[in-house]
Length: 100
Length: 415
Ligand SMILES: Cc1cc2nc3c(=O)[nH]c(=O)nc-3n(C[C@H](O)[C@H](O)[C@H](O)COP(=O)(O)OP(=O)(O)OC[C@H]3O[C@@H](n4cnc5c(N)ncnc54)[C@H](O)[C@@H]3O)c2cc1C
Image (cartoon, rainbow over all chains, first blue to last red; front, top):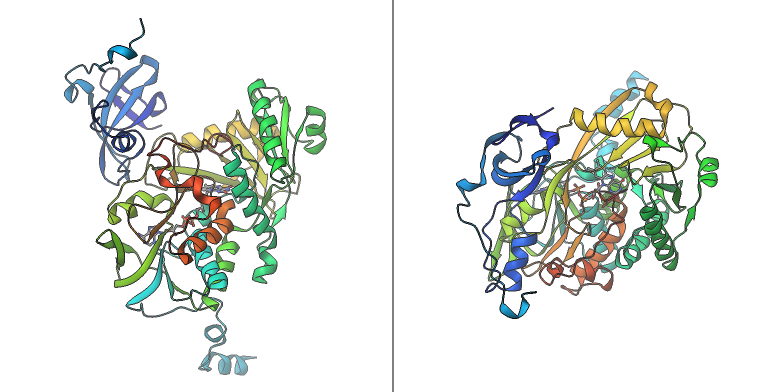
């Protein structure tokens, strides 16, 4: 079985992990167009090469980021998401939409 | 006779050259009306119908490997129309109709064999969804029934009715379910297209797409640059890569899909049997081998390697369904790379580039659609971009307006 190195749990069988898609920049949901939002949600580069992507270690519920080559399947590096995302994102809720 | 053999061998009109089924054009012309990128079933079918119904023959099919060597050669050849959405069922039913006539039309046997497909339900929720699929399928003229355990047992006596402790509650019995020889489908279309003047260029890879003022004007290949009036992209697993050359992204992710086959045994299984909960389907070929297939690999990859994990998982389920198969030996395993969409429906029609048409997102379910794809893509090309009704729901921009066609009757969702 292929082994992936989880930044939290160390080397584990790949079957314990779930792929979560390419890491990409989220547009501002309040100001972006539908097209920009659709592009963020559905479209991807799906390229051959080293890709930065989200992974989940399912048994511990821990999301992290991996750099992996999409042709050789070599896992170059795995790291905690805080390396890229170091700020909490608050989805601004418009007053009239807030449910009390 | 050694002498006549010598004479035959030295003959200038070597009979194979003269009567070749597939003429091999030596040079690329500098320009074509239509360039088709990808010589799989879909590409050659498009060329065939362009030549046959629309009289458009100044067409080049550019294939980086060999004819039908991609997913066309790798699929498990299941043909069916018992999908869930009306858009899907309408479309696939047309394809099944065309398939039935193909051997006659080609005057070449594609070994179409209508054996019926049985999908097993192990939960009440699946039984409910099968009821819906039965009705949708009947509504569009398909032959599908929901059958109970007694009928299933009679139909497939070798089946374990309690696989993996999940009793079989009901079955979706699709009498139109069939298989065909996938290579023969590609060959038949290619033969018919080239006889009408279409050029098939193998070992010709499109390395770049030339777009001027938002419109495709040509393609670069490893054998030189050619101009074109319009282009059709039908490259399956490579869809995102070729689209990137034309300058746009697609809502596609490429996953490997693996399948395998055992040594041949005596005929025992006429139907194709699949289980929605075990993610496994089993069928016996005309040669007696047993073919197993299942869901896609768990994460995206551009690699046709095979994995032990998949073999173990899939075979464990297959043996639950047919316990005696534990004694058989695997003979071959292979992989294709498939272009998956998030709603399990294809992407067909226009693209952000003018005169550049898409036939993609065929994932794990596109062999059965080969004829109807060819026919509708040819209509699209011949009309200069008027999208045929049948494929309108599959436009790529359905994602931009959040109007997906949620096809949960797809293989990867169940099979
Ligand atoms: C294991 C497996 C089992 C399957 N089982 C079934 C099934 O039972 N039923 C079903 O309906 N479907 C099934 N499918 C799906 C089906 O095989 C595909 O959807 C279908 O074959 C797609 O046909 P195509 O002509 O679009 O693609 P392909 O046959 O893959 O043709 C695309 C061609 O494009 C060429 N190409 C790529 N890039 C370039 C380039 N830059 N320049 C030139 N040429 C290029 C490739 O070499 C390839 O030959 C299965 C697939 C796999 C892998």
